[in-house]
Every structure is written in C-alpha cells, then in structure tokens.
Image (cartoon, rainbow, N blue to C red; front, side, top):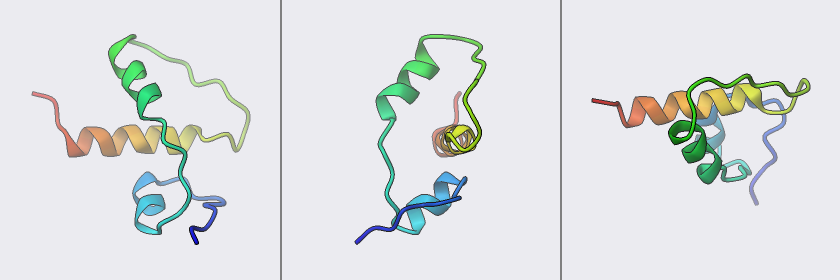
Length: 65
C-alpha cells in the first residue's frame, strides 16, 4: 500500500518513496504552454513547493533547446 507523503516537498523523493501522488500533468502542461508569468498564491501547506519541485524535475529531465 502506498503511503501518504505528509511533509514531503520534493517530487523526486515522493516518486522514489512510492508515495501517493495526484497526477497534475494536464495542469503542468497548460501552465508551461499557455502563459508566461504566474503568481502562486495559496495557503501554507497547499503544495506550492511540490509544484515547483515537479517543474524543476521536468525541466532537468527534458532540457529545452
């Protein structure tokens, strides 16, 4: 059974620990392709760091250019 990633803020750790993760691929795709600047305004503990970590890992895995 997968564990809940309480307090995990790093996408890579979340995936290597086989933790529960809600796939936000469609949202990340739209974020990258349909805009330029975003202000991430969400309450504390709502996944801002995890989203930024996900984007970081995406760009490191598939560099532009």
